[in-house]
Each structure stands twice: as structure tokens, then as C-alpha cells.
Amino acid sequence: MSFDNAYEALAEATDDSRWAFGTGFTEPLSAVDGALPSAVDGADLAAYCLMLGDDALIMSHRLQEWCTRAPELEDEMAIANIALDLLGQARPLLARAGRADGSGRGEDHYAFFRGEDEFRNVHLAETPRGDFARLSAVLLIFSTWRLALLDRLVSSADPVLAAIAAKGVKEVTYHRDYAARWTVRLGDGTELSHQRMQAGLDAVWPLVAELFVPHEIELRLAEARVGVDPATLRAEFDGVLAQVLGAAGLRTPEGGLLQGLPQGLPQRVPEGAPAPSGPAAAPGGTGRSGVHTGSMAPLLAELQSVARAHPEATW
Image (cartoon, rainbow, N blue to C red; front, top):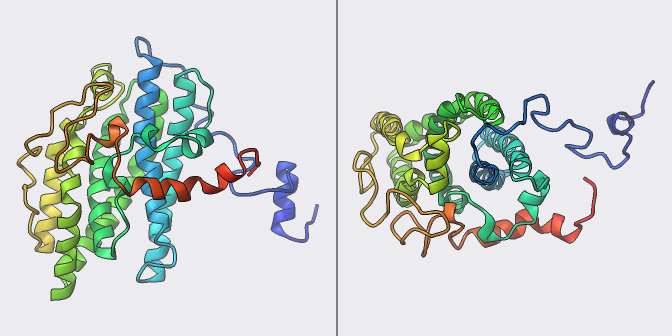
């Protein structure tokens, strides 16, 4: 059958004339066994999926803000693709949360109809856009940390997490490489580019320590071989950052790569209780405990505006 345009063909395939990206696609990882691992609490697994999914969702939204703002068209496309990769990771993680806790809530509920204090992403993901050097710093830190995390989740006892991680490792390897190349290019470039790259690192470095503070749920799932204790990722993170910053001729920001967590931050965050404030935290706690920086509210207002204005709409 012939069609006048591609949209007619897509509407025919999905039996929906209101076709938009996502309509008619099968649920992510629908072929993967969704049974919960034995002896794992569904609420814990759901909370963990929200942590990982929120990191990806919020970081993806920040990256899409670079559309029409990147220095070159090639970089605009690269950043957009990184954002799409992270969105692709967020979708099955949020869907898994709804199945794990038995609520049956879908990815749209978690993305668009939760309040700020219900999000569990790290502060680094929500930090404001800044200039391109700051983007390179944020993306280098985030992708180095997330790649180390996903690499360990490939062997998770939860088959859904393992499948998401296996795909994510390939994607985030590219994300880290892209950010590392730009960090070296700017750091080892002109005097101005070096200064701006160093300033970008200095600006976001206080957010690094939070990445390695384990929540009680992360510790329980790590013991069950389902999740990962983020504190165990620090050595790999330090090694990668030291190599990249060394090649870029950049100074390690105050606090040092190898000095661990700043004083005042606990080694774990008790479930239900925020961590004390510190260099890596918003006043009152960490992102994992639902406490966020002042940048989060306006980000969510934009992210959720259309869905909240038309809650019954079909997209």
C-alpha cells in the first residue's frame, strides 16, 4: 500500500492518527524475564531503579537544553544523541520501578507526576547548564561514574538491571570518550580555553563527593548482588579522572581525587533520613534522600509542564 507521506504510514502501522515518537513501540525490555530476584524486597528494588532512572532522566533533560546552543552542529548532534541514550536508559528503569513495587505505575507517572522531593537523582545531574567547558566537566564526571556503575551492574542478579546495564555500558563508554576528548582539547588548548575548562571543573567539583555516598538501600541491594555500593567505584573514578586531567594539563580541584569524601559527609545515608549538609549536598541532605538544589524546581516545571497541563492526553 502506498502513502502520501511517512506520517500516514506510521499512523497506519499504529492505528493511531495522533502518532508521535514512542507511539506503537513495544515496552522496553519486554522480552526480558521480569521476575524479582529471590529474597529481594520489591520496594527496595523499585527505589533503586528510581535512583538510577532519575539520574538518567534529569541528566538527559539538562543535555537537551544544548539543542541550538552547542558551538558546532556536530557537537549539537552528539549531545542530543547522548541525551537520547540516557532517556533510553531511564525509560525501562522507571517502568521496572512500577513493576517491582507492585503499583503498576508506568514510566510517565514517575517522570511527570512526582514532586521534587520524590526524585532521587544526584545533584550533579540537575546542576545548571553553564558554558560548554562546564558541560564537558559535568559530562566527564557523570559518565565516568555511571560507566563504572553500569559495568558492575552487568552481573546483577536482577535480569532487567543486567540487561539495561549491558546496553548502557556501550552507550556511556562513548559519552565518557566524548567528554574526555573535549576536556583535553580545551585544557590543552589556548590560554582562554584552559582557564574556562579549569573554571568548569572547579565549579562542579563540590558535587563529586555525593556520587560515592551509599544510601542504605544501595548497601542492602549490593549485599544481595543486585545493586552496587557506590563507594566501591571511587578508585576507578579517581584513576580515569587523573589520566584525563593529566593529559589536559588541568589542576585537580581543591579536595583532590584521592582524598575520598569531604569531612562532614557520612559513609552511608540511613534510609528515611537526610545526610548532613556539606560540600556535595544541598542544605539538608543528598539527592538520594529527596533533597535537591535550587535548580531542580525550575527544571521539573519545564520537564513536566505539558503532561501536567494535559494529563489525559495520548502521545
